[in-house]
Image 1 (cartoon, rainbow, N blue to C red):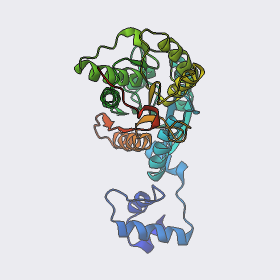
Image 2: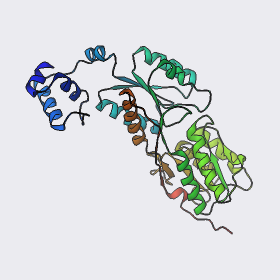
Image 3: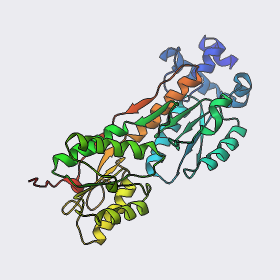
Image 4: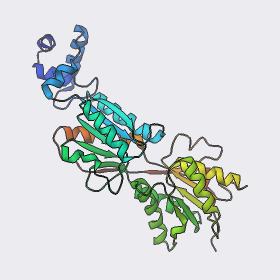
Length: 333
């Protein structure tokens, strides 16, 4: 490091800061200085020693990321955003799947703490009976992503707003009998998206009874089961809002099995705008929750925490993506 500092004409601490991330701007160091330091370091073949750095700072430059399922495309996209920002800042991220189970999260947290993780980003928060495994009491910095929980800083989609967008879309297309597939009751995403939709409809004088909101889960199987129950209601809903694209896919399969056509006999709207939504034979109307931006924002907020700054929760504004699954209009008498 001394050779790099000498040739660049800067202090060793400036070299350390300039090389902390692999690329991108460095707060407090001019862009020209950063470029010069990195060029000279490359010419000399210098690489920072992470072990030595961790001994100096008492940090391992590692962040643990816990999410319900690694197989979920939305959660994977959130993690990609987190990992990219942390990597640019000189941190490595360790991701673990909890199966949306608090006890399993406890086990994973203990394991990652034994690996000297400096902080955590948690994507499986529950609304009730969830003390986030005592991290606050242990003084370990952490941030919630995708889901919120009372008393903790989080970065989420503005889920209530997203639900309202769905309610407005269906109402404007003439739908008055609507069913909701609401996910798990302990997840803020399920609660807030359903509440947003019901709230908008209530403002228009459309009452959506509890029998029309079914909380079976977020996967395809849950969507299938919930849609079967909703299609048996009298009168049958003319539209179904699933608070997750995977459960929307299950609902579409059940509708097909009943001999009905999505986008003609019944409207379906999902949430998260996964890659498959626009590529289905009948493309799925969905709310874009902007998961990559959510992950980016969560990582940046955590870095502020690690720098000793106070942080507040953030919400990412969603966008409705109308497609074939809900593009027909009903005549309202």
